[in-house]
Length: 115
Length: 117
View 1 (spheres, each protein chain N blue to C red):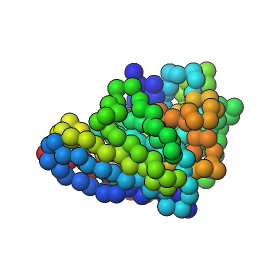
View 2 (view 1 turned 180 degrees about the vertical axis):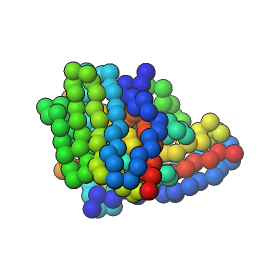
View 3 (view 1 turned 90 degrees about the vertical axis):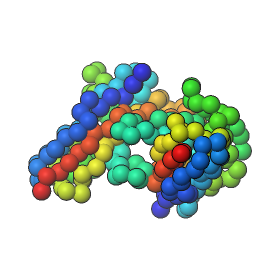
View 4 (view 1 turned 30 degrees about the horizontal axis):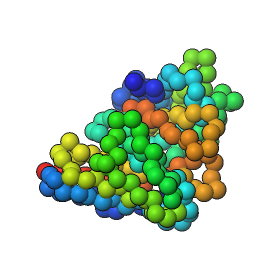
């Protein structure tokens, strides 16, 4: 039962253009969402997060949008750079409950930026 | 800041042997550490939550006698794969939650590639 889904296993984008990575979830208990970037043979690196009380959060070139009614979030990267090539995971966490900070990860999307 | 290390980064062992993987938070204290497993081209799957000074909480389907977790201090958690078999070959990643961090803030280690022959 994959509660967090990233339906696109891969995505190629021209350098300088916008990269849009999508994520869907099924569990209505999730209220905090995160995006991680991962290089091969390395652990994930935190990129950006969003709480369910917001619908948008921006940090430099990265913006995350949350549509709670559709249980959908997306990560926008603009402009895309070659160093952005990596696997991106979205992750979700349930409502604030100390000691229950489990992250449920999506299956990942491999982003390739074409120079 | 917020660096998590894992040792070893890569290990190859024979079937039936036990392997210990260390996870250390280098510049912060962590009451909670998490152990994940990643199969090729798959998502990270949470195996267990490790709390300093108490027993680990295992996810459904994870054998606690197979994957022994010890969280002896605020900076160190270990995962021991006992009597390893080829199907245990995987990429194991730990994460650590800072003592003073946000409730769902986790920093990940670089991972350990386990190959069981």
